[in-house]
Image 1 (tube, rainbow, N blue to C red):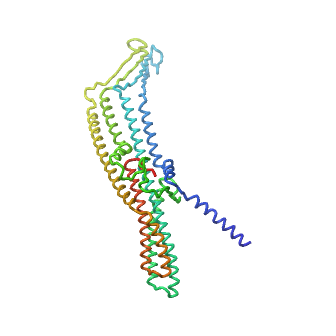
Image 2: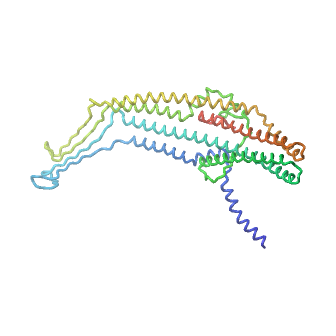
Image 3: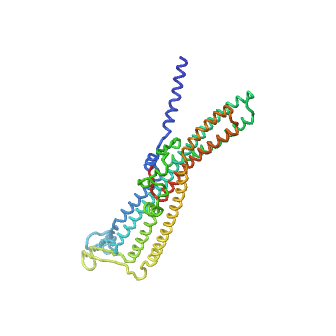
Length: 434
């Protein structure tokens, strides 16, 4: 009975813990992460609202100016001593209706500027999407390969800790010298310290990824990659035939960036907007027309007078010269800024292409069977060391070489994916399909 109660209470205690672990652990692939990111990222939501805001301004610019009405009433008739007289023979009422008519197509020109503002807001949204998606993908890969490295450290630390415990027992029996045991413990401490540094890096990546996905900070994200063993010759630029990075054309990459970089498109749209503003400023030099209708109930000319009138400013002194000059300068300045930014984009593409080319070539020259063979070798080394067929110096040398080769290979894979993502970011689209 006592054992049954202990089992029940133990099951009750562990069940919520298991549910919590299952609930707070998110195993997710890169396509799933991107889909969740697009749906739930708060920065994207806020930026997308900016498009709706500018569409509202666009709608506002379509509206006509409101008409105005003027009413005049005689408050007191000093001859008849009446207050607010309303009869026609003893009072005066005037009613005026006015409407402003914009000339020279000002309304359409203002609408064109509002539409371009909406385009610029959309450009900013898609550029933010490009930037955050780049952060998502690079953080995803970084976290994945960091976990791969942590698995190597976990394997080595587990094996080495067993060896240290075994040699501790043998040392206490006087079968092994203290210097060998000390070297093993020192190397175990080194591995543990390096593991802690990777754990800190993994924690930072976890926090960044959770923020991008709008997930709970306590969520444990486990990135899962498909086709992680794909070699560079299995990459497919834009879904075409298999090709390596070196077979990409730099001129084609420049053109791809021209077509897909929304930050560059925002500069081009700003040039368009400045030209539209120059056209509007020239139109503002044309005065607008004021149309007026007047009714005077008891006018001095005739009773119940109706009159129509028009009014217009005379462009004698102010012809909007200063604003036209300023708009002309802004148009020239925006064009020069666009040309300068285009050169910057080309430079980013060139730099990203060179980095991707270098890492791609290095990865292609690496023999992936090397690590598998090394893993089999280190197992034999561990067995021989426990049998004291090799000394502690040789054992630690092999052990360290195995760790370094595994970590460097994992880092090479990460560097390769990071460089490919940087190239994708530079051209504004995903060039590769695996």
